[in-house]
Amino acid sequence: MSTFTEKEIEYLRAQRLGRLATVDAKGRPHVVPVAFRYNPQRETIDIGGHNLARSKKFRDAAESGLAAFVVDDVVPGDRWRARGVEVRGRAEVFSDFADELIRVVPERIVGWGIDSDAYRPNARSVG
Image (cartoon, rainbow, N blue to C red; front, side):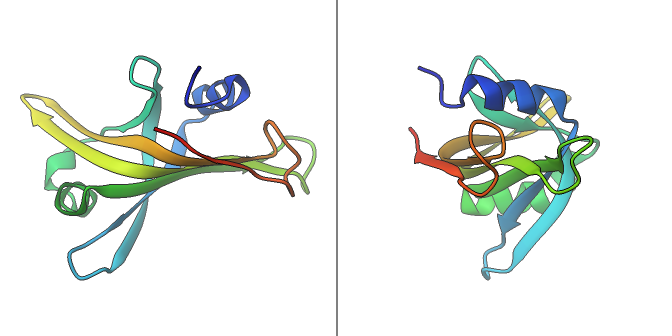
């Protein structure tokens, strides 16, 4: 069984931009827009970017080992119906050679407006 539902995976693959939240050593939050991809082999959210290893988000993820990620939008043609996926979990960082990556390993997933009504989130712990 997959960590994400089939509809959540379809939704994640159709999106291009999300927001990554990290926290620094003093507990100060940091949220930034990021490009991402759903990694089907590991069932994770993988975040890359130019000079990623030099960024605050990379340092925070490496230090705390925690991250949250959200991708959401409004259903086209229905300005009142929101949908999205929030992923909270462990952050792993990689800076091997030219590949710099923050990987969010899900521990809790909350989806809304995808598998359920936008006002009834589908929340679950995973892992």
